Amino acid sequence: MVPVQQCAKLVQLDLSNNDLTGPLPVADHWRDLTTYQLSDNSFTGRLPLQLCLAAHILETLDLSRNQLTGALPNQVGVLGGLKTFLIASNRFTGTITEDLLYLPAIRHIDMSDNNFFGILPAVALGFPYGLLDIDVSNNSGITGIVPAQMGYLFALQKARFTNTSMACSGIIRPYNLLDGLW
Image (cartoon, rainbow, N blue to C red; front, side, top):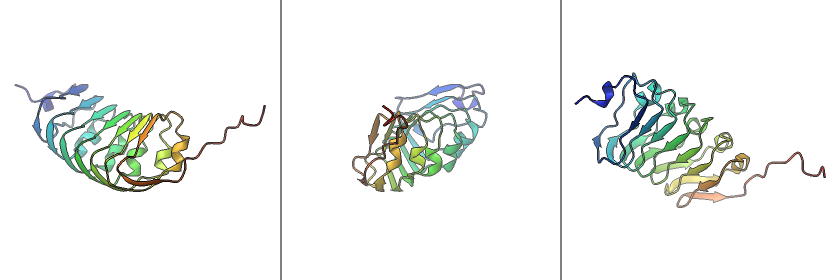
């Protein structure tokens, strides 16, 4: 049997729902990788920095429902084509950095059911204009105010902040230049 790390031309890797254990598989030569789906397993360890640096064109990263730990590497922010970032139901810790939310192509973020803490970066949450949904629920250490800048996310359909320590002071309604012309 050939280890998956030896697949030099790998474009999509989906090992979901297999009860796999150990560290996440990764290889330096996975430059063409667009999909990395390893949800619903028992992987342990950290999100490998090597994955963020090697898979520059990654679009889907789904590590939900594993046993992953540690802080997310800031280099997740170099994944400029990332559209789907799902890491729910793990044991990740640390703060959610601006680097993570400055992903221009991001559409779906689910970081729920982890151990994140700190304040969500308000400015960064006004940036991903195509964001459709974000879920940071069940991270009781996340504090602060739901960022008012989220009002600029015209495509946003769902934002979940339940079971956090966040408050809401109102979402900005962007000024419409056509208001008052008729």
